[in-house]
Length: 288
Ligand code: GUN
Image 1: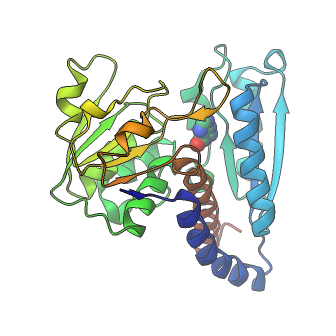
Image 2: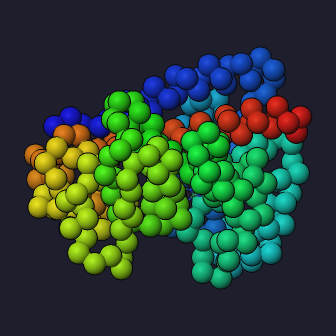
């Protein structure tokens, strides 16, 4: 079994980005990310902290606009996003989810200028991700990070049985799409899937993004499978764990991601990649 080291892959991504950022700096352009957070979700706070810390390390500017839930409405958020869309000093807009239930998320995402949509959540960028690898420009960060991980370890995807567990708009669905673009044979399982194990046992590549500790046990995994765990959970001792029973599944898998240190650092690295890409695109279009 070989560990798929997300930190190592992220570090390699940062080396490439440093070259791009240096060439932008020569043109006097320093990308700027604005993060919008509504509420005090604990997990969101820790993700935002790491996004801002990595931005700072790379010399990307970042700003957090934080609101109490009762301060904002869908309309107010849209007005704020419209202002950021027009602001030439802002290259990247990220609305941290989950948003409180009185905010209508799809309308909020719709307001983001697709050129500044570094999460890849707008219909425009998702549509491009749908088409083919050639059009995947600003793809959603977590699945993009997993593609970078598979590429780094030279894990072939074409023709493989890939099973994605989880069908969220953020992760599961775009992950399945990106694997189809690479010509894997893809099954996407979700809460209504009958006999999950029957599907997971067929997987050459098993990608799990649900948020349920030990959802995937050793008997659900084919010997020699590549196992990617995107889940983040706290176990009863407060330790961060994934969706896969790592101890037992690692004895069967050929490759496996640890949690933490697998998908997490790659999501942040992909966001940085998207910030650079978005800024370059804005420059090319004469928008900045
Ligand atoms: N919440 C959890 N992960 C993410 C992410 O990648 N982007 C945003 N905007 N919110 C998140």
